[in-house]
Image (cartoon, rainbow, N blue to C red; front, side, top):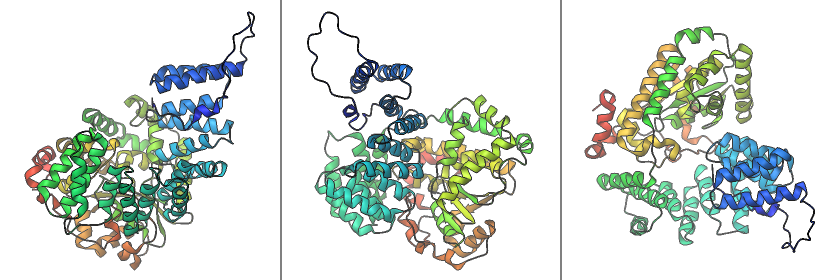
Length: 550
């Protein structure tokens, strides 16, 4: 359970004067007063990080006062980071019971952002802003939601309003810089990040974002400043990780590769992320067993015949963003970015969150009607991103784990698997700062072993879905862009359009770690980039085994 405190939720408990000495036969407290007392205790327990006890008091309130909004709200805050889907449901119930409370809409919107549901986030963060126009967290949250929804230009005035309200709020300048970066306004983004650094606002994140706004050919003054920050022995580990990544990026640009890799290694150690590789192997075993040829034959005719969905997937840093940008440059294609919807649906069916038996049961027992309902739920969500488009691209890389479900729900959907030289792909992951959900990126050996499991699963999907998965090799794409781009558009069943050769001119925001690169024409400098680090990556090469092309 999360120990995050709700935004000023104690304000919602009615304040009372200090109790006077009670007469001998005082009346027992009313139900509302008793609920108040329990929720005050829950607040104290949450502050003391005695979270199970706080949760138990909230449930006691709900047992006698069903749908008590504040109790639901507190349960939502306790669930964040443990079961985000459940937390979202609690926030939704709280907001429905107290629709005029801006904090309830704020937390519901933030939970939507955390789960990747930009549409829900926009709806409720807009409402929070209407109810409390000076609520900076809501303004910044709404701005982030617009950026995620490919509407970064709508985020800019929101951040500017927030800046006027509270110029030192940690979300504002870095958030505004991120929105500007998404629309390619790198110099303006850099100016705001420098202001954040001068004001000592989230210095690690600010430096990490600043060095990503351009490529360095000469040593910048920022490098010495970053190294000076790193000399502080009391530095927070998360900040240290951010600063080491920033230093590594600059040194990599300057071709000082040995020093760069040293900082990347230190960044991973400071972040302290872990990964249960054996659990991941078991989940791959389970998917291979469940999605057998016989099961897929039994599920023929399920799902939706729609040809609208296009799934661009593969390992992160394998060329998924570039591939989406090329496809989305076609007038009949909309690029929706990295959508979490399908993986959330898979999670609710038991994949990755429950036992293998739950996953197997949910697929085996799925009826035609149920599969059509699930397909339509996803399609409805997808169409909101690109109304009228003949093809809509969902480029969530890790959808490679749920190709089996895609094959059942959307037998006519296009699947594009982006593949890249294994060592290059892994090194490109390692030098970037991924969040803890990508814990496999924490050390070179684990990363290589993870890649082998990804490759094992993809070989299974190609076996059970013969001819359905188009493999796009990054090296082929950058060597002969037009030929490979024509093959991509042909795979989508569309007529060629020359705009696909000018993908870097495509309007709209780019919100992945590749956002700087995809605003440039195709370049081949990333091919065999791993050789720059050859002396430091032997654990990765050993872990990759026969997949490493030396």
